[in-house]
Image 1 (cartoon, one colour):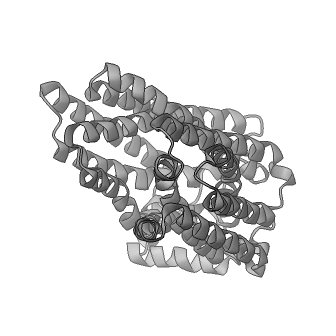
Image 2: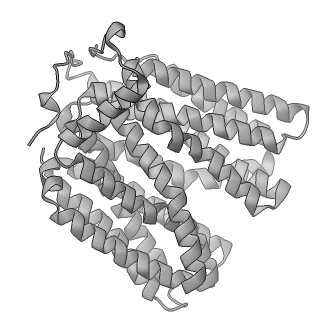
Image 3: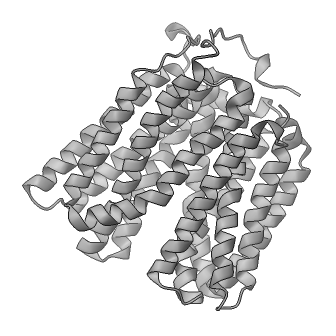
Length: 418
């Protein structure tokens, strides 16, 4: 099996063993705070647009401008991330988010925030995220020892799960008490705090390509694709992720619809389902962190996809009075998700040399972002045609089949070996 060790050597001095946990804690203290405040602001913006326009088209467009730059730029941005210092890139991204927030808040202080300005800021924030997220994932192996990457991928995901649980509630309270510009300033403070904490991170020196030997951006991107193909199973892992994204992301948007239309639930019950799913994801993240050294990676990935698919399949078979079972299934499905996403992240970090990680994570993120709108179109069309419960059933059957294929792919077994 070919892997990252075949590439030209990279020299790196690891941090002292007693320091890396402290460095990880400092990094994620800032990142978790920024993630949480951004989640609060995102919910507040959705409610602001709903209150001011009442237009589904406006909300759809806001969603589009919020992820399209990541989908389009992600493939090429990875090469830039690999050229330059990732810590500096993250500082610039956090600083840009803070500056955009200040501009938006100032606009609100002078009058009502115009919808077009919110769209522009959402688009530019998406560009910042396209640089920030892959940089964070590529930077982590410089801090965390390889044998601990799976464990700490689980712990990192637990921060995201906490945000999913708490941010809607806090956003609801703040939106009822404060104007949007005040909530924006909270996010500005979160981004500033993340940048401040990042300044205390000490990273080992990693050799990079010298400026006179750099290739053109497109050539570097192609090189990243070539490297992925040369590591057995990574291309298949990326394809599985893209196919899974076709189902996973759109289904999340249909949870409120199936709760309130098919199961006849209320807004509160819809919120309960979201909280249960996020709580399950938090529990799954913590379990992944605790069980990391004992996990069979290929089995865990396949089981994660399969459990999620089984949950969808059973939901599609439930009668309209089966809300309680659906709510329980949401908790279980949420618990399964980190065993796919966290392990996938750790595999990339383990199998790819650090100097190429920016390209790989950007490519993976971009592929998922491209799959999302296609999945939304498919799910919206077929759910309307066949009924939402039947679409859940079909999606479940398809996802379980994907889990079986994933488990049986020989190249993925090789890839998942430590």
